[in-house]
Amino acid sequence: MTLDAVEMDLSKSFEFGMGYVALSRVRTLGGIKLLGINYIALEVNPQVHEFDKALQKLSQKSSAEVAKMGILKKRSAQKEFLERCEA
Image (cartoon, rainbow, N blue to C red):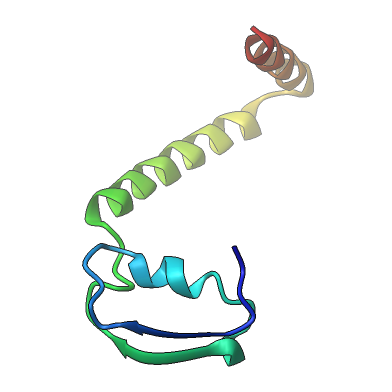
């Protein structure tokens, strides 16, 4: 759901990222009237942050491996991937 305007009080947020979820629904910054906020409203869950860092490392490793491949090896890997996706 998206909103054109909202008036919200995030001072009683009790879960990581609640404020982000609420604020992300508003189409423009001008449509936000923020009455209050607390420390946890925009904080990222530490477990999610660690998982994201692990995914970034895997992505960098995969990108490096693909960069080393020749065109024929890339095409073969793509074909194998697509075949696995269809199963």
